[in-house]
Each structure stands twice: as structure tokens, then as C-alpha cells.
Length: 302
Ligand code: AMP
Ligand code: MG
Image 1 (cartoon, protein in one colour):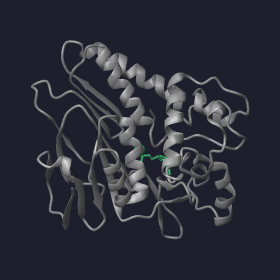
Image 2 (cartoon, rainbow, N blue to C red):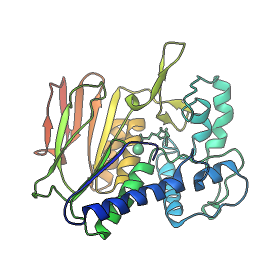
Image 3 (cartoon, helix red, strand yellow):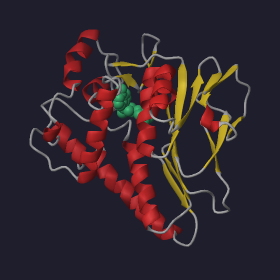
Image 4 (cartoon, rainbow, N blue to C red):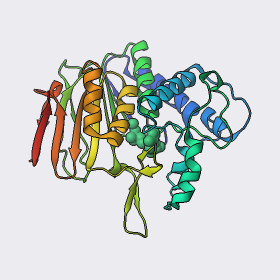
């Protein structure tokens, strides 16, 4: 990953497990990186030839395409031509003219059949930025397990994935990042799960027009999301689901997330921090969540 990684495993198999898990993360990166010329996704994005897809890539593409349709392309794995134009891939930021965006948007649709995964139409491109770290984390946790590790904490660029509980059997205490910087606003006691956060504060630029533009886009419009949400955090069994949901809920908001939660057996939990210093969290966190600062309003979704 083009990102900070720290892996702490406990017990007799820790060293062996760590090495194997780190190799696994690098292996996944070689499949999914949009910027590494040797990666499979780079080859798909930059050639008109058919590219041989590895099994993991086929899985991740299928998963992502399903999530695109599930969100009517608000979550859009194929938005790369647009985010690239804004400069989010290079750091050369610009605000494109509205017409340029409307010209690029048709390239961001997925109309190909799923039997054509290995050949994107010209000009189209995949970006796994919203799900890749969660997926890589899941794969790393699997490898740790295969190596006999039963307790570990993996931090992949701020995505936390926990294997088991702490060596002494108690829960890990995970602090959420303060989107404004400064003290940890919330801590949660957890084991055996992923804790994945999305927020505009992670990457943005301020343009000559005085406005700030963030790295999370509405895939339907081609514009950075405008929202009163500072960050969304998902606590889920799998990192991939959490990574998808953190991004999707940042784009689509609390009502959407609450509906999704209810229609998916409340099988995950969530925390939303807002600009007005209020907080929303799901009831499954009651007894585990510790609010470490004053909030203007606390809402628990039941
Ligand atoms: P995350 O930090 O997991 O929320 O992912 C953010 C990253 O996902 C961005 O930096 C982009 O690479 C990518 N991205 C931005 N907007 C979207 C979107 N609407 N759908 C899917 N991926 C996106
Ligand atoms: Mg995500």
C-alpha cells in the first residue's frame, strides 16, 4: 500500500505470521494499485489488451461492481477518469470546468458484462482506493490465522483490523481519529473485527476559489461530496465490507446507513462525527464506546 502499515502480532508465531502477512499485503497491492505500473489494475487501466486477472482481483471486482449497482453508482469503482482530472491521483489539483466533468462521467459507467472483466473499454479505469485496504487487511488476517497467530492488531493507513483479543484476553481499546486533529474523541473496546474510517479530512485541497475539495466523490455527479459529516467509522467482521460502507456512508449519509444497517441484520456497528460536534452511533456499541470529549448532541440509533 502507498500507506503507513503497522502490524503487531502476539504469541509464539508472531514473527513468522507478521512476515507472511506483510508479504500478503504487498502481493495484494501488486494486484490492485492504480499507480504501480507493474500492477494488474494499472495494466487494465492503461492497455486495450486483455489482461489475465488473478482470482483475488476477480473477487474484488465482482464485489465492487455489485456495490456500485447497490448504491446507484454513488459508490463508483470506475470514477478514476474523474478523480484523476481533479488531480487526486497526482497531487496536481485543479477544479475542472463543469463541461469537462460531464464529458468524463460517461467513462465512469460500468456497462460491460461481468464476463468481460479482463477488458475495460478504452478510457475507463478502476480505482480500488475505497476498498483495497480493507480487502488487503482481510487477506492479511487470514494469513496470520494460517500461521497460528491468534492475537494481532493491524493498522493499514488508519484502518484497524483486529485478530482475536489482546494476549491477556481483554478487548483492544481502539481510539477514533479526531477529524479536526488533536485528542482522540471516542474509544471503543473491541476484538476480532475491523474498524474502518472515512473522512474528508484525510485528503483535500483548497482551490483559488476559496473552497475546499475532498477526495471522496459522489460517483453520480463527479464532484467531491459536500456534507456535514466529518467522518464515518464502521465496525464490522470483515475489512472489505467496512471499507465499502465507510466510504459509501460518507457519501450517502446517516439515513442511508441506518437503512442499510437495518436491512443487513444490524450485522455491523457505526459511529458518525459531524461538523456541529454531534455524534451518532449504533446501539451495538453501547457499553463498549467511551466518549472522551463533550459532544453537542449524542444520538444512539436503536
Ligand atoms: P476511503 O478512504 O476508503 O473512504 O476511500 C477513499 C478513496 O476512494 C478516494 O481516495 C478515491 O481513491 C476513492 N473514491 C473517491 N470517491 C469514490 C466513490 N464515489 N466511489 C468509490 N471510490 C471512491
Ligand atoms: Mg473505504
